[in-house]
Image 1 (tube, rainbow, N blue to C red):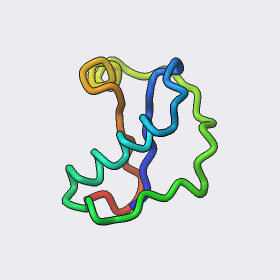
Image 2: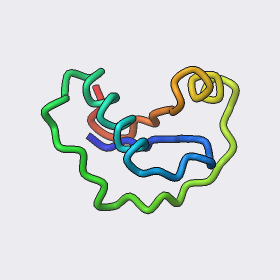
Image 3: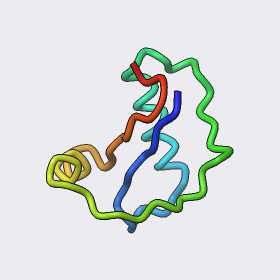
Image 4: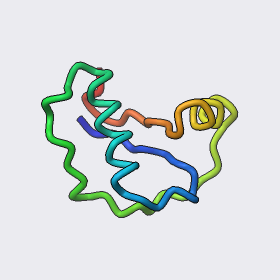
Length: 70
């Protein structure tokens, strides 16, 4: 699975961000899968649309599903 975790810019603690990723994997029934962030560079800085913003305000994060996230 390949996905991005979008969080507010004030969240710098990687353990919190990785926990969001583990929560996402669990929601997909993939909680036993290893969360690897080898390519993670915390490099995406962008504005979000209102749907994504609402989810971030509600959950603290938003997941962008990229590959194999069914």
